Length: 153
Image (cartoon, rainbow, N blue to C red; front, side, top):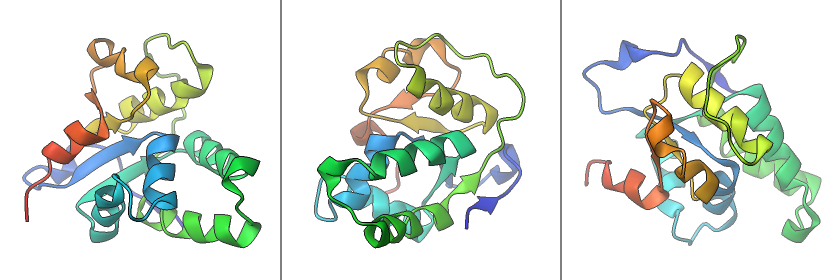
């Protein structure tokens, strides 16, 4: 189940980060528990960050989890989704959102989610999205740059 909360700056005065995570960032955190993005999985589990999700970005994640190269059965896919989606804040992108033109049309929902959800950042390793950093009012950053914004324990 995805949490549904009003988007926006009601979190003033907190260190909570509301981030849009692109599909491959989420997959890296989920599929490689000892990998370089383990910190991200720990961050959403601990509530340090709240990933934002829309119907389109969730559909994309489910679609990619079905890729044969991952070799995931239905139960494994459900387990991975269950480790991510309950930590997400659901954002309904109901109105047209003005975002920069992107080369890959599958990137557009992530840009729209970031703007509609008033995200603190869009976290991606996708060079096409990173190239749009100056064209979006929301910071577009790499996972390494995102990690640098978190408080150290």
